[in-house]
Image (cartoon, rainbow, N blue to C red; front, side):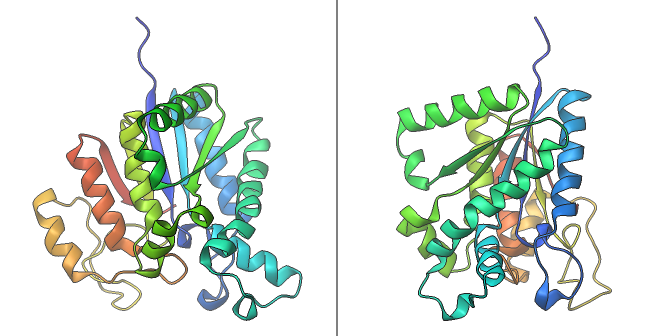
Length: 249
C-alpha cells in the first residue's frame, strides 16, 4: 500500500499577508502570496504533502479595493460582512495569481459554521477539499461572512473566526499538521511590539498555554483574533494529535 500523503493546513491571518512598510498603512503584499505559493509547490511536489490554505484578509482586500476607486470605506454603508464580500474575489485573485506561476490552480471554499451542523454538508466539503488538494489544486478556505450572522457577531467581539475555522478544517480532513502564520514570528511572553525584549517561546507546554492566553491581548490591528485566538485554536489541534505550530512567514 502506498504511503499516505501528509495533509497540512496553513492558516494566514490578515497581518501575516501585509507588507512591512508603515504599520498604519500596511497593504496586502503580492510578494508574500508569491513566496507562499513557491513553498507550497515544493511541499506538494517534493515532499508529497497535500496543502489546504485557510486565508483571512477579505475585509482588508475590500477596503483596499474601495480605496483604489476613490471610495473611503469609513464613509460607506457597508458592514464588515459586506466589506468581506467586496474583498473576497480580490483576495482570491491574489492567491490565484501567485499559484499560476507554478502551474497550480486554486479552488475557493466559502463556508459558514452552519455547514458544520449538517453531516451531509460536512462530508461534501471534506470530500471536495481532499479531492482538490490531492490533485495539486489548492483549496482556499474562508468564512462566508455575508450570509452568517454568527460570523459577524464573532468578529464584532474580536474573536478570530478563521483561527477556529482552521481547527475545524484540520479536524474535518484529518490533517497531520497545522501551521498558524503570524506577522510577529511566533509566540512571545508579551507583545514584542510593546516590549521588544519579550522572550519568544521555542516550544510551549500544553499545560502552560491557558496561563499564557490570559496574559495576552485579544485582537490584532488589521485582523480580528490576534495571538490569543491562535493559541486557543492551536491547543485544540494539539489535543487532537496534530503537529501544531505558530510561526512567522
